[in-house]
Every structure is written in C-alpha cells, then in structure tokens.
Length: 166
Image (cartoon, rainbow, N blue to C red; front, side):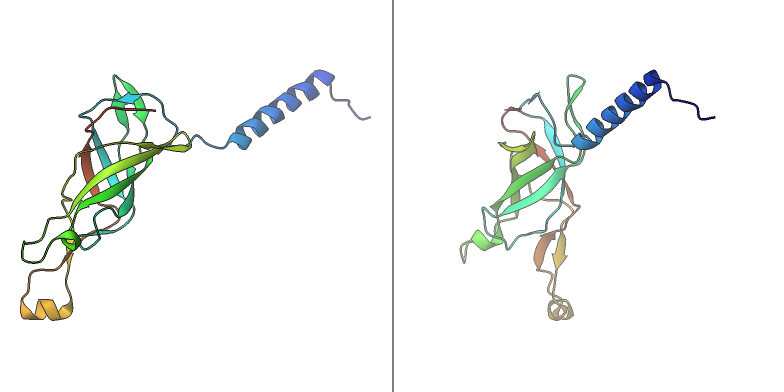
C-alpha cells in the first residue's frame, strides 16, 4: 500500500524550495554593498592589490581593498574587502633632472560601492614598508639606491580629506 503525501506537506516543501532558490539567485552579500556617510578625517586602512613603483608616472592608478570595516557611530558603513582605486601623486618619474627625486606619494581616488564608483579625496601618503628593488650589479657595487616598490598586500592608511556619502 502506497501512502499519499498530504497537500500541506507538498505546499510546505514548495515554499522552502522557492525560498532557497531566491536566496541562491541573489548570491551571497557582497562586501561592496554599503550606505551612509564617512566623515572627513576618517582613517581608511587599505591593502594594495597591484604593484606601485616610484618610477610610475604621476596619475597612474593602482588598486586595493579596504582592509578593515569602517564604522561610524557604531554602524558599519563600509566592509573590509571593498575595492578601491588610487592614484600616484608624486614619483621619481615626474622629477626634473638636477632637482632631486620626489618621494613616492599616493592617494585614494574612488571606492566601489553599490555597483558603482564613488569619488573620494584623501590626503597623499608616502607608503611605508615598501621594498627596494636592486639589480645584482647595483648590489655588487654597494649602491643602495634602487626602485622603491609597493607590493600587493602592503597596508597603507589614508585620511579622508572630505566627507563621502553613498
């Protein structure tokens, strides 16, 4: 003898399947979904995802991601992992001959939130923890100058120069 499944059970199973399908279709929440205002003066800790060199020209962009949640008044307004774009503000490539070389300077230009790019303005910083790339010939001669590199994963702190709302 075969037992029949009750219509209420079928309806319950159907509703659960619909809910699971809806959750799967939207996918997991992304780190880049945010809302709110981040006040001027807020520190943003960023980990680079691309390499930066002091020989790169001023204006060249680099990428990174927010390394720590940004919390304002107890609410997380920007999650760790949110993509950012920055620009080189000073470099050796832009220095004039005979005037010495400018130290490498970088600033953030935008953050990717809610499916778009939001312009931001931060104060320029000089990356700390950068490595100096030297050729074997330079090392054998005892030359200490080289190309300062900021490798992916380097953490930097940027201070917002203006409030940003998204």
